[in-house]
Length: 321
Ligand code: SF4
Image 1 (cartoon, protein in one colour):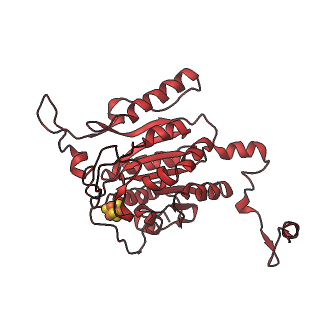
Image 2 (cartoon, helix red, strand yellow):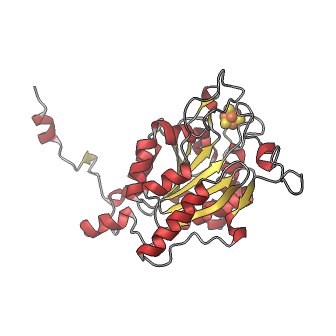
Image 3 (cartoon, protein in one colour):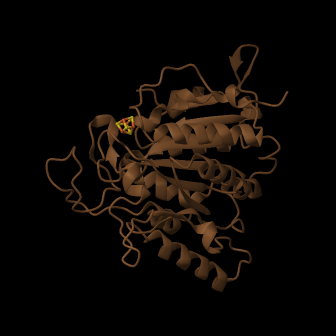
């Protein structure tokens, strides 16, 4: 029987604030899993710490709520142990681009075939709205006593520089576009990153739903407010690397970085960059370990007759004092 949307929903009590953008992201993930007909036992959601960390509780597939800044390490390990699983990673901008920034860069270099979604609201919502790594220098949200004193990090630019082979951005209140982006990211062969703009109505009173819709963004010709968000696909933008020529790769990377730097009056969403000509990490491992993909670690027996197969007695002996 084909899975239904309701199959991916859980009964777990949700205590996110009313109007939080997180709701749209969870809905988009559930819709994407339904449309792709991914069996529940073949999918896993890994989440970090923060408001977005609860995502793994609300989607009815395998769910693993991990440690602050370490979610990518758990997810990569699971994918490498069981390459057949569809892995979606969910975390906040503070989790992934603050304490987890080193893992973000390392994951980009590996290119494990999975999807990483950052819920980007520019504040640490779970701990009362401190400035996160994506809040711009000089901004003062209502939760800050003084304007932010740090430069912000550009998630799209950092993902491109780190080697992610699919880089996109969605908006949590455009659930339909976000669902399509998640499907494209999951289908991508390699590590996909989605920066999802997620208004936090409780602590970020600057990047609000009205702000994204155009509040204060006056077009000088028409004197009317213009929506800040637009879709790259509506402009004829082509993010895909079609050939592995150095010239084309450089051209696609450069245009993605230019788009990554657009902000404020015009904010692009959609796919910025996609390159499937770089081998996923699993393929590189398979080139070194015969039968890795046919017989991955998750399929190998770990015990026989109730006893572990692995003999660690020599290791324990070596540690004896
Ligand atoms: Fe959402 Fe912000 Fe509330 Fe957290 S604090 S649940 S991010 S609105």
